[in-house]
Amino acid sequence: MTNTLAANILALRQIIKQPYKQTLFNMNDVISNKEMTRRQKCFGGKWDLFSNEGNLGTSESLWVSRKENMIRYLACDCTSTMDVSASLLKQNRFPQWSWILSEAQNQGRGQLGRSWISMPGNLFATIRLPQNAGTLGNLLPLALGVVLVEVMAELGLPAEIKWPNDILVGRTKVGGILVEERYGKSLAGIGINVHKGPEADFFSQSFKIIPGSFQTFGVKISVPHLWMRIELFLKHRLAAFISHPGHVVERLGKCLAFKNEPIIVTHAGPWNGPATLVDISATGGLIIRTARGDQMIDRGQISPQVF
Image (cartoon, rainbow, N blue to C red; front, side, top):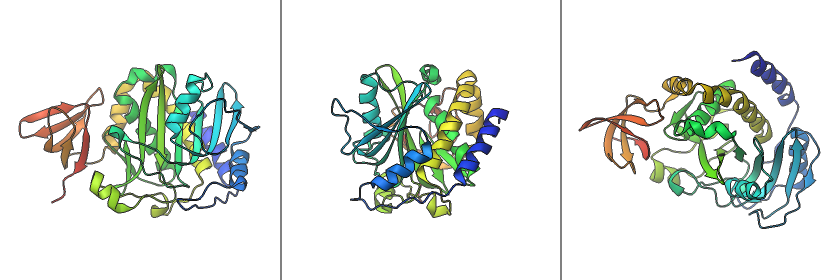
C-alpha cells in the first residue's frame, strides 16, 4: 500500500466516524429528500438539479456536482446506472472518473445479460474508467474485483472473486461487476448488497450460490461511505494494475474462489460440464482441468458442484 493511499484511508476513516443514519427501504419505496440531502452532504461540494434535455432513464430527480475534472451524479431511481452513464457519455457529460450512484434501479443486469435484482438501499454505481484501462483486456473486471476485495478486507470481510466478475463472502454473493465499452470508453458497473440481498431462491436456481450482504456478516456502513472507499482504492490501485498486469494475476491467486475445487462450467464454448478450477491465466482466462486435459476458457459461467 502506498503512503498516499494510506494517508487518504486515514482521512477517510475520520469522515466515516461522523454519524450517518441511512434509512432502509422496501422494494416500492423511493429515496426521501432527507436521505438525498444526507448523501449530498456526505460527498461534499455543491449539488444542483440536473437539466435533463433527453430521456436518461431516471424516473426521479438527478443531482449533479462537479469536482475537479470529474462529474458526480446522484439518482433516486433509474433503469440502470450503466444505461444512464452511457446516455451522459453520449452528451459529453461523463468525463474520466465521473460516476453515478443510484438508490435503486429497475433494469439492472449482470453477466450474460442476466437480470440483476436491485434491492433499494444497496450500492448501485457506474464509474468511467481511464482511457488506458481497456489495455487490461479480460483482466479488467478481475482487477476491479481485486480492488473490491481489498476494500472489503479493510472492513473485516474476507472476500473472494468468483471468476469472472462476482464477489463472494463466506461463499455467498455480495456483489458483482459489469464492464462495458460505450462510445469507445470503458464503464464499470458495480453492485453490492450492503443491507440486504435478493431472495435466496432466485440465486440458488440461477447461480447455485445464495445471496449475502454486508449486514449478514455484521458489517454496517452507509452506501456513500462505502462508495468513497471504493472510489479512493480504484484511483490508486487501477493505475498500478494497468502498468503491471501481472500484479492482478498475482493478487487473484490469493483470493480466487473455488481454486482446486470441482466446478460446473457453462456457456464457455470449448468445454461445458464438470471440471476442476486450476488457476487464472496471464490474460485473465480460467484454467480448468477436464476429462480432456487442462484447458483455458475466456468466457462463460462457473458454479460449484453440488453433490
